[in-house]
Length: 153
Image (cartoon, rainbow, N blue to C red):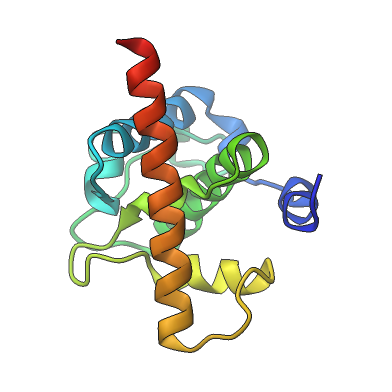
């Protein structure tokens, strides 16, 4: 296991382990985008998903407010995407969350790039470096999902 995988595997996921059904649906939606060689917005990713999160309260079901993301929404989706990417990286060598983008700029959130910086995968934080890294992850994800589509045919 490389240093990045070790760092991700050691992370304590708060929300994702609480709801394997939501986790599987998010992973499936990312896979569909990957197989179609496209990206998916955060809003489309979570639209209509019931998150069963006992630690959040509120009747244990949480819906993302896609018209006005709250801090809690960002923490929850970040946790799920982090664990999904931990799995995709450890098993297949790419960050699946690179395929999830915001609607305004059509690129990942600042949180994605902050996490990549924390993982120490970026030699610097210059915009060209960051965008090159992201593009490389998108390419790896598309190639892997496309190879899975061919295996299923």
